[in-house]
Image (cartoon, rainbow over all chains, first blue to last red; front, top):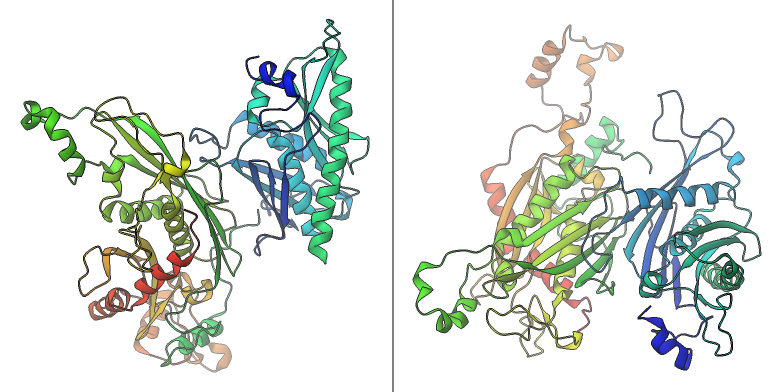
Length: 251
Length: 360
């Protein structure tokens, strides 16, 4: 781990100067686009995401038997697009990219449980997310932006869905030589994501109910608890920020 | 995504009304604009930290586009230069100034429109049109030259965020213009044909479209990227930046690309390309005159060919007939004059776009 060990242990400051439990700057706007039913723009540090929501509306495939949506409830479509210029190198991700599809699936299952789908039978709610700039915590940024756009569209939900990332870095305490002590970190950027095991979690309304938990790296099971605790705390703060954005817009 | 409304839902009577109000002198447009007035827009540039240049433009009708320009170093294909073999070292500096070192393949453009595939005709046609203007405007591709072995490859990625409500060409062109205006390349530190090494300091970077040191407002840019304007004609009237409803009654639609001219001659703007666009009005349903409608005492034609023949014979005011035929030559001439002349539309647009704050 050439990145963290050298400097983090000395001052307990991360590469971008944050402490372990600090979020990056979150800046968000809602109603950014007049043509969509709901739209939002979210920055988490250097990660930038734009989200538009269309619907609830009649589905695309009308006439072909099913007019969008299941029997008694609405159908949720999520589409995520990575802009070619979003990464460090210019790369186009096709529509069939598996990681993108998995992110979209995660979002659609998470929001299906939160949106009051039974109010809109035979209709479709579609969420379009464009990732403009990637610098870590992309799934979390997508979830937060989608929440804001759905609020802007006036889609009834039980509560906000807020997300952030948490990681586990090797311990810095001098006394312990054991492996089961670790220092959790909150809200990773792209460089930290490459170095450390991390998880993305989303909670309902900043509470303790976790609806999304995604982890793609390997970590000792003892460390999970610390990461979750930090993540839940982070989600609580993200919720306050997003709530502030929504309330600020209404003024 | 809601289905893309390719066609405006207007009845033949409404189309006829719109057409006749647009053919008055001066024309009355549905949104009250003058013929050369553009729709209001919100524009930002230099919005993305990870791209060399970027811009976002929102039109008042809600269409929104984001353009990111990204440059990557690429190895050039070796090209034999037989004459310069002997005096290679001395010639190097000279070669950098020589026009024509750039190649068309160094600029790549891609357009993403929601609800369309990459290989659908609309994105392909739009990107061809915008690339053509960009390459025709002269020394952009020459500025991507680093040395004989390396060059910059410029990727222009256009993202239409909203569904294409109107014909998105002007929006995409304006956004691309702004993004290129804000685009910067890192300063080169290595010399001649070495492997390129760049300055880490972003402050030292050089804009792709350089400015002269003076702070004079108009001649501040030595060169500017092109803009493509959408122009339509109804009768004798020429209308700029048509909205979706206006396009539905257009008799002719043209896309005109132009750029600021470097030489301080009579014209401030030079023309790069003209393309005619098939007007969507041809697909609108025609109105049926009373004479051919049995419900109003007329005699209905027996077959569709008969209907066509009878309609051809009568010219009725107030009954919508989709326009046919091409563009008259003197109309093209008048359009071009309006665009290119000093104080004309293109100059106005270029000046207005320059006012949008570009961080430097």
